[in-house]
Length: 213
Length: 270
View 1 (spheres, one colour):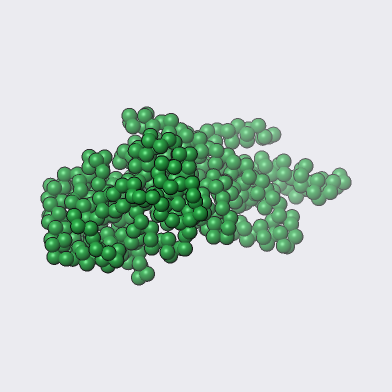
View 2 (view 1 turned 30 degrees about the horizontal axis):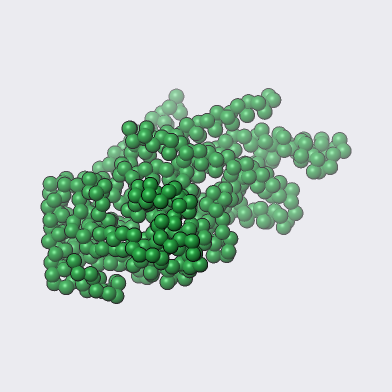
């Protein structure tokens, strides 16, 4: 375990990048997911189709493939992204599709009477969605979102293939230097676990805050 | 009550599965590994599989290249078949130590550091390592100019260790980007996301030609690397047998034939 202690700062730096990528991608993923969910439920046929195709493609292809396409593939079309930027973009797009499904289910779970009542009080359709449906839907969406986010945290390990030194890559670098596997992989497993537990804890807090029942 | 039963069942099955996996990995005992290989009739050879012209997958989807030919020839002389297993370079040495492979023939450069971990045969090739930059780059003429730049290199390779441990203290800090294969390393160099890479020119020729990368070699060789066949520490019998086979190959011209086939030039006199 001495090798791990000696290299803890290095591993922690990797953990920092893992967290950073997770948080940034989640932020944009939430925005993308919300827009996609509304497009699928309330959009005209054109937007509905686009949203459906996007969700279908993202959910039907491995995230590793998406990351490699964004980073190495787009270069052939003259789009050169930095490694971190590519990681943000690929993972935001990826998580957005899953988030949109969570939101879609949640919006559909809000009783139709709520919308009807809102419309009856003279709100427009847009106002009803913004003020009545979404606030309730977010609360319903929290548990599935929590799952998605914890999954996302682990998926960040995939960006190690595009020269981002996140937690997994830090361990791989150390393995290459010391030729021992277990201590490093065990310690990053513990780190991932701590981070996902932390996320779960925060989400539970938020859920309690939002619950009115 | 029901839930706990299901959990228990799950735990038991997973334990059994894990146990079964554990039994599958045949641990080669060090003493008679040569005998074990010959009894089995096949030798498991670890390669990167993405490193043309040394070891790569050819158009027929078979492993091919200089390393592969050498490994096949060695196996033939030991009276066994070669069975190639490809994985990232960074996993090769740990895999060898765990008994996943019998030998590595994948341009494993002999270094003092590695000698402590694994056993090497006599070298079977010497490679000159040079600096490679984009065609229009004029700022980097040699490794002396690496300071503050982004250098691309294969993860776990000897070149990475050289950059990190030998060069960085000498020329000042620079950023090291690590990749799992040579193709992505060069791709990032070509895209301008890395400023330079170091590698041996034999290895890069086919990839550069195939992809039309606009890169060039600058300066004189940084170092000459000797690569050898690697075996698990303490496998002296196997190493001796491999050494004998290598010496015979060099003697009877087979080695030279393989060398010329892949590099279009004669091997340097030793």
